[in-house]
Image (cartoon, rainbow, N blue to C red; front, side):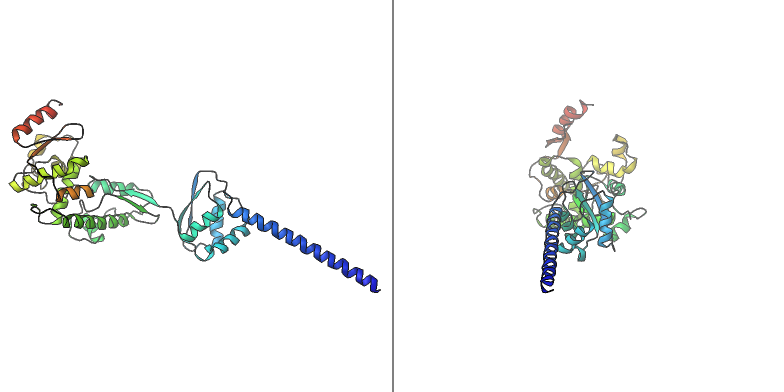
Amino acid sequence: MKAATRHFFRALLLVCLLGLGLCAAAGWWLYQDYRAFVDQPMAMSAEEQIFEVRRGDSFRDVLAGLRRLGIQEGHDLYWRALAWELGVMRRLQVGEYAVEHDSTPRKLLLRLERGDVVQYRFTLIPGWNLRDLRAALAANPVLVQTLAGRSDESLMEAVGSPGLPAEGQFLPETYQFTRGSSDLDILKRAHLALRAALQQAWESRVPGLPLETPEQALVLASIIEKETGQAGERREIAGVFIRRLKLGMRLQTDPTVIYGIGAAFDGNLTRRHLETDTPWNTYTRAGLPPTPIALASPAALKAAVDPAEGETLYFVSRGDGTHHFSRTLAEHNAAVRRYQLRRR
Protein backbone atom coordinates (compact mmCIF):
# COMPACT_ATOMS: atom_id res chain seq x y z
CA MET A 1 0.00 0.00 0.00
CA LYS A 2 2.77 2.33 0.93
CA ALA A 3 4.60 1.55 -2.33
CA ALA A 4 1.46 2.21 -4.36
CA THR A 5 0.95 5.54 -2.57
CA ARG A 6 4.50 6.55 -3.27
CA HIS A 7 4.08 5.69 -6.98
CA PHE A 8 0.84 7.71 -7.10
CA PHE A 9 2.40 10.81 -5.59
CA ARG A 10 5.44 10.51 -7.81
CA ALA A 11 3.20 10.26 -10.85
CA LEU A 12 1.13 13.22 -9.59
CA LEU A 13 4.28 15.26 -9.01
CA LEU A 14 5.52 14.38 -12.49
CA VAL A 15 2.22 15.45 -14.01
CA CYS A 16 2.29 18.69 -12.02
CA LEU A 17 5.86 19.39 -13.07
CA LEU A 18 4.98 18.61 -16.67
CA GLY A 19 1.95 20.89 -16.44
CA LEU A 20 4.03 23.67 -14.93
CA GLY A 21 6.58 23.18 -17.67
CA LEU A 22 3.92 23.38 -20.34
CA CYS A 23 2.42 26.47 -18.71
CA ALA A 24 5.84 28.08 -18.50
CA ALA A 25 6.53 27.23 -22.13
CA ALA A 26 3.15 28.55 -23.19
CA GLY A 27 3.68 31.69 -21.10
CA TRP A 28 7.11 32.23 -22.60
CA TRP A 29 5.73 31.76 -26.09
CA LEU A 30 2.91 34.21 -25.41
CA TYR A 31 5.35 36.72 -23.95
CA GLN A 32 7.64 36.46 -26.98
CA ASP A 33 4.64 36.76 -29.31
CA TYR A 34 3.43 39.85 -27.41
CA ARG A 35 6.88 41.49 -27.54
CA ALA A 36 7.08 40.81 -31.27
CA PHE A 37 3.60 42.36 -31.72
CA VAL A 38 4.59 45.54 -29.86
CA ASP A 39 7.19 46.63 -32.43
CA GLN A 40 5.89 44.94 -35.57
CA PRO A 41 4.93 47.34 -38.43
CA MET A 42 1.24 47.10 -39.16
CA ALA A 43 -0.10 46.13 -42.57
CA MET A 44 -1.94 49.10 -44.09
CA SER A 45 -4.10 49.35 -47.20
CA ALA A 46 -2.86 52.94 -47.75
CA GLU A 47 0.26 55.00 -47.02
CA GLU A 48 -1.60 56.88 -44.28
CA GLN A 49 -4.99 56.73 -42.67
CA ILE A 50 -6.65 58.95 -40.09
CA PHE A 51 -8.72 57.89 -37.13
CA GLU A 52 -10.28 60.06 -34.46
CA VAL A 53 -10.49 59.76 -30.68
CA ARG A 54 -13.64 61.56 -29.58
CA ARG A 55 -14.40 62.99 -26.19
CA GLY A 56 -15.70 60.21 -23.94
CA ASP A 57 -14.19 57.36 -25.99
CA SER A 58 -12.88 54.37 -24.05
CA PHE A 59 -9.93 52.30 -25.16
CA ARG A 60 -12.43 49.74 -26.45
CA ASP A 61 -13.80 52.46 -28.77
CA VAL A 62 -10.28 53.32 -29.91
CA LEU A 63 -9.48 49.70 -30.65
CA ALA A 64 -12.74 49.31 -32.56
CA GLY A 65 -11.79 52.35 -34.65
CA LEU A 66 -8.40 50.82 -35.47
CA ARG A 67 -10.05 47.58 -36.50
CA ARG A 68 -12.35 49.52 -38.83
CA LEU A 69 -9.24 50.91 -40.54
CA GLY A 70 -8.28 47.35 -41.38
CA ILE A 71 -5.64 46.87 -38.69
CA GLN A 72 -5.84 43.20 -37.77
CA GLU A 73 -2.50 42.76 -35.99
CA GLY A 74 -2.53 41.47 -32.44
CA HIS A 75 -5.19 40.03 -30.17
CA ASP A 76 -7.31 42.61 -28.33
CA LEU A 77 -5.65 41.44 -25.10
CA TYR A 78 -2.25 42.39 -26.53
CA TRP A 79 -3.49 45.90 -27.34
CA ARG A 80 -4.97 46.28 -23.86
CA ALA A 81 -1.80 45.02 -22.22
CA LEU A 82 0.32 47.46 -24.23
CA ALA A 83 -2.06 50.34 -23.51
CA TRP A 84 -1.84 49.58 -19.79
CA GLU A 85 1.95 49.26 -19.96
CA LEU A 86 2.30 52.67 -21.69
CA GLY A 87 -0.28 54.42 -19.54
CA VAL A 88 -2.58 55.12 -22.48
CA MET A 89 -5.60 53.72 -20.63
CA ARG A 90 -5.41 56.64 -18.21
CA ARG A 91 -4.37 59.40 -20.64
CA LEU A 92 -6.32 59.10 -23.88
CA GLN A 93 -5.98 62.41 -25.77
CA VAL A 94 -8.88 63.59 -27.92
CA GLY A 95 -8.11 64.38 -31.57
CA GLU A 96 -7.19 62.98 -34.97
CA TYR A 97 -4.23 60.64 -35.35
CA ALA A 98 -2.31 59.53 -38.43
CA VAL A 99 -1.51 55.84 -38.90
CA GLU A 100 1.30 55.40 -41.43
CA HIS A 101 2.17 52.19 -43.23
CA ASP A 102 5.26 51.70 -41.04
CA SER A 103 3.58 52.47 -37.71
CA THR A 104 3.94 49.93 -34.92
CA PRO A 105 1.47 49.41 -32.07
CA ARG A 106 3.95 50.97 -29.64
CA LYS A 107 4.50 54.08 -31.80
CA LEU A 108 0.78 54.48 -32.37
CA LEU A 109 -0.21 54.23 -28.72
CA LEU A 110 2.58 56.56 -27.66
CA ARG A 111 1.07 59.14 -30.02
CA LEU A 112 -2.24 58.75 -28.22
CA GLU A 113 -0.49 59.14 -24.87
CA ARG A 114 1.31 62.33 -25.98
CA GLY A 115 -1.66 63.78 -27.84
CA ASP A 116 0.42 63.88 -31.03
CA VAL A 117 -2.57 64.74 -33.18
CA VAL A 118 -2.74 65.55 -36.89
CA GLN A 119 -1.77 69.16 -37.65
CA TYR A 120 -3.31 71.01 -40.55
CA ARG A 121 -1.93 74.20 -42.11
CA PHE A 122 -3.51 77.41 -43.30
CA THR A 123 -1.36 79.99 -45.09
CA LEU A 124 -2.16 83.70 -45.33
CA ILE A 125 -0.56 85.05 -48.51
CA PRO A 126 1.17 88.46 -48.54
CA GLY A 127 -0.82 90.84 -50.71
CA TRP A 128 -4.22 89.24 -50.02
CA ASN A 129 -7.00 91.66 -49.20
CA LEU A 130 -9.74 90.85 -46.71
CA ARG A 131 -12.03 89.43 -49.41
CA ASP A 132 -9.29 87.02 -50.47
CA LEU A 133 -8.70 85.98 -46.86
CA ARG A 134 -12.36 85.42 -46.07
CA ALA A 135 -12.81 83.36 -49.26
CA ALA A 136 -9.80 81.16 -48.47
CA LEU A 137 -11.03 80.53 -44.92
CA ALA A 138 -14.53 79.70 -46.17
CA ALA A 139 -13.09 77.20 -48.66
CA ASN A 140 -11.10 75.30 -46.02
CA PRO A 141 -12.84 71.94 -45.41
CA VAL A 142 -11.39 71.36 -41.93
CA LEU A 143 -11.94 74.67 -40.16
CA VAL A 144 -15.20 75.26 -38.31
CA GLN A 145 -16.93 78.09 -40.19
CA THR A 146 -18.17 81.00 -38.05
CA LEU A 147 -17.57 84.12 -40.18
CA ALA A 148 -20.50 83.93 -42.61
CA GLY A 149 -22.61 87.03 -42.16
CA ARG A 150 -20.23 88.59 -39.65
CA SER A 151 -19.38 92.22 -40.41
CA ASP A 152 -15.81 93.52 -40.50
CA GLU A 153 -16.54 95.58 -37.39
CA SER A 154 -17.82 92.52 -35.53
CA LEU A 155 -14.79 90.58 -36.70
CA MET A 156 -12.38 93.10 -35.20
CA GLU A 157 -14.32 93.06 -31.92
CA ALA A 158 -13.98 89.26 -31.89
CA VAL A 159 -10.20 89.37 -32.38
CA GLY A 160 -9.81 91.94 -29.62
CA SER A 161 -9.28 95.21 -31.51
CA PRO A 162 -12.62 96.99 -31.80
CA GLY A 163 -12.48 100.15 -33.88
CA LEU A 164 -9.54 99.13 -36.06
CA PRO A 165 -10.20 98.59 -39.78
CA ALA A 166 -10.16 94.87 -40.55
CA GLU A 167 -8.16 95.27 -43.75
CA GLY A 168 -4.50 94.33 -43.37
CA GLN A 169 -4.76 93.41 -39.69
CA PHE A 170 -3.48 89.84 -40.02
CA LEU A 171 0.09 88.65 -40.45
CA PRO A 172 0.68 86.55 -43.59
CA GLU A 173 2.22 83.33 -42.34
CA THR A 174 1.47 79.60 -42.16
CA TYR A 175 -0.56 78.65 -39.10
CA GLN A 176 -0.93 75.08 -37.85
CA PHE A 177 -4.22 73.94 -36.36
CA THR A 178 -6.10 70.81 -35.38
CA ARG A 179 -9.58 69.67 -36.37
CA GLY A 180 -12.13 71.53 -34.32
CA SER A 181 -10.36 74.88 -34.73
CA SER A 182 -12.42 77.67 -36.27
CA ASP A 183 -11.75 80.31 -38.89
CA LEU A 184 -11.91 82.87 -36.08
CA ASP A 185 -9.21 80.98 -34.15
CA ILE A 186 -6.86 81.44 -37.12
CA LEU A 187 -7.68 85.15 -37.39
CA LYS A 188 -7.12 85.74 -33.68
CA ARG A 189 -3.65 84.22 -33.92
CA ALA A 190 -2.84 86.08 -37.13
CA HIS A 191 -3.99 89.39 -35.65
CA LEU A 192 -1.89 88.96 -32.50
CA ALA A 193 1.10 88.08 -34.68
CA LEU A 194 0.52 91.20 -36.81
CA ARG A 195 0.31 93.50 -33.80
CA ALA A 196 3.54 92.06 -32.40
CA ALA A 197 5.38 92.36 -35.73
CA LEU A 198 4.10 95.90 -36.27
CA GLN A 199 5.15 97.01 -32.79
CA GLN A 200 8.60 95.49 -33.28
CA ALA A 201 8.99 97.26 -36.61
CA TRP A 202 7.75 100.58 -35.23
CA GLU A 203 10.20 100.47 -32.32
CA SER A 204 13.08 99.95 -34.77
CA ARG A 205 12.06 102.78 -37.15
CA VAL A 206 14.68 105.22 -38.36
CA PRO A 207 14.33 108.85 -37.27
CA GLY A 208 12.72 111.51 -39.41
CA LEU A 209 9.96 109.45 -41.02
CA PRO A 210 6.78 111.32 -42.04
CA LEU A 211 4.78 108.64 -40.24
CA GLU A 212 3.04 109.50 -36.99
CA THR A 213 1.68 106.14 -35.88
CA PRO A 214 2.29 102.40 -36.31
CA GLU A 215 -0.99 102.28 -38.25
CA GLN A 216 0.41 104.62 -40.87
CA ALA A 217 3.47 102.37 -41.16
CA LEU A 218 1.13 99.43 -41.72
CA VAL A 219 -0.73 101.29 -44.49
CA LEU A 220 2.56 102.11 -46.22
CA ALA A 221 3.80 98.52 -45.82
CA SER A 222 0.64 97.21 -47.48
CA ILE A 223 1.27 99.46 -50.51
CA ILE A 224 4.88 98.31 -50.70
CA GLU A 225 3.67 94.69 -50.57
CA LYS A 226 1.38 95.24 -53.55
CA GLU A 227 3.96 97.17 -55.57
CA THR A 228 6.69 94.54 -55.67
CA GLY A 229 7.39 90.90 -55.02
CA GLN A 230 11.14 91.48 -55.25
CA ALA A 231 12.78 91.42 -51.82
CA GLY A 232 15.63 93.65 -52.97
CA GLU A 233 13.25 96.41 -54.11
CA ARG A 234 11.11 96.84 -51.02
CA ARG A 235 13.34 99.39 -49.25
CA GLU A 236 13.91 101.37 -52.46
CA ILE A 237 10.18 101.58 -53.16
CA ALA A 238 9.65 102.58 -49.54
CA GLY A 239 12.25 105.31 -50.04
CA VAL A 240 10.35 106.70 -53.04
CA PHE A 241 7.09 106.88 -51.07
CA ILE A 242 8.73 108.37 -47.97
CA ARG A 243 10.39 111.12 -50.04
CA ARG A 244 7.08 111.87 -51.78
CA LEU A 245 5.32 112.16 -48.43
CA LYS A 246 7.99 114.54 -47.14
CA LEU A 247 7.70 116.71 -50.25
CA GLY A 248 3.90 116.73 -50.20
CA MET A 249 3.72 114.86 -53.52
CA ARG A 250 0.87 112.45 -54.14
CA LEU A 251 1.88 108.82 -53.99
CA GLN A 252 0.19 107.99 -57.32
CA THR A 253 0.31 104.24 -56.83
CA ASP A 254 -1.97 102.00 -58.90
CA PRO A 255 -2.70 99.34 -56.23
CA THR A 256 -4.49 101.91 -54.06
CA VAL A 257 -6.72 102.89 -56.98
CA ILE A 258 -7.51 99.24 -57.67
CA TYR A 259 -8.34 98.68 -54.01
CA GLY A 260 -10.75 101.63 -54.10
CA ILE A 261 -12.54 100.14 -57.11
CA GLY A 262 -13.11 96.96 -55.12
CA ALA A 263 -14.70 93.79 -56.46
CA ALA A 264 -15.82 95.66 -59.61
CA PHE A 265 -12.24 95.86 -60.90
CA ASP A 266 -11.94 93.70 -64.04
CA GLY A 267 -8.15 93.70 -64.36
CA ASN A 268 -7.94 96.66 -66.75
CA LEU A 269 -6.87 99.90 -65.04
CA THR A 270 -7.94 102.89 -67.15
CA ARG A 271 -7.41 106.65 -67.03
CA ARG A 272 -11.00 106.99 -65.92
CA HIS A 273 -10.18 104.84 -62.88
CA LEU A 274 -7.19 107.05 -62.07
CA GLU A 275 -9.36 110.16 -62.22
CA THR A 276 -12.30 108.76 -60.23
CA ASP A 277 -11.97 109.85 -56.63
CA THR A 278 -12.21 107.34 -53.77
CA PRO A 279 -10.70 107.53 -50.27
CA TRP A 280 -7.92 105.21 -51.54
CA ASN A 281 -7.13 106.96 -54.83
CA THR A 282 -3.63 108.34 -54.31
CA TYR A 283 -3.80 110.08 -57.70
CA THR A 284 -6.66 112.30 -56.51
CA ARG A 285 -5.76 112.54 -52.81
CA ALA A 286 -2.57 113.45 -50.99
CA GLY A 287 -1.00 111.42 -48.21
CA LEU A 288 -1.65 107.84 -47.22
CA PRO A 289 -4.96 106.03 -47.75
CA PRO A 290 -7.21 105.67 -44.69
CA THR A 291 -6.58 101.92 -44.30
CA PRO A 292 -4.17 99.24 -45.45
CA ILE A 293 -4.97 97.73 -48.83
CA ALA A 294 -3.56 94.23 -48.28
CA LEU A 295 -1.74 91.88 -45.94
CA ALA A 296 1.81 93.14 -45.42
CA SER A 297 4.67 90.72 -44.79
CA PRO A 298 7.23 91.33 -42.02
CA ALA A 299 9.71 92.30 -44.76
CA ALA A 300 7.34 94.99 -46.04
CA LEU A 301 6.83 96.28 -42.49
CA LYS A 302 10.58 96.58 -42.02
CA ALA A 303 10.98 98.37 -45.35
CA ALA A 304 8.29 100.91 -44.43
CA VAL A 305 10.16 101.99 -41.28
CA ASP A 306 13.69 101.67 -42.71
CA PRO A 307 13.54 102.92 -46.31
CA ALA A 308 16.56 103.11 -48.57
CA GLU A 309 18.20 106.50 -48.82
CA GLY A 310 18.43 108.14 -52.22
CA GLU A 311 16.90 110.73 -54.53
CA THR A 312 14.50 108.70 -56.66
CA LEU A 313 10.87 109.85 -56.76
CA TYR A 314 9.44 107.63 -59.51
CA PHE A 315 9.45 103.99 -60.59
CA VAL A 316 7.90 102.00 -63.40
CA SER A 317 7.59 98.26 -64.01
CA ARG A 318 9.99 96.73 -66.49
CA GLY A 319 7.51 93.95 -67.18
CA ASP A 320 9.68 91.24 -65.65
CA GLY A 321 8.72 91.75 -62.01
CA THR A 322 11.35 94.44 -61.37
CA HIS A 323 11.17 98.24 -61.58
CA HIS A 324 13.17 101.10 -63.08
CA PHE A 325 13.71 103.97 -60.63
CA SER A 326 14.11 107.62 -61.68
CA ARG A 327 15.02 110.88 -59.97
CA THR A 328 13.20 113.28 -62.30
CA LEU A 329 9.89 113.30 -64.14
CA ALA A 330 11.72 113.52 -67.47
CA GLU A 331 13.71 110.37 -66.65
CA HIS A 332 10.52 108.66 -65.53
CA ASN A 333 8.60 109.54 -68.70
CA ALA A 334 11.45 108.15 -70.78
CA ALA A 335 11.35 104.93 -68.74
CA VAL A 336 7.59 104.68 -69.21
CA ARG A 337 8.01 104.98 -72.98
CA ARG A 338 10.76 102.40 -72.91
CA TYR A 339 9.15 99.77 -70.69
CA GLN A 340 5.39 100.25 -70.96
CA LEU A 341 4.25 102.17 -74.01
CA ARG A 342 6.50 100.11 -76.29
CA ARG A 343 5.15 96.88 -74.76
CA ARG A 344 1.57 97.97 -75.32
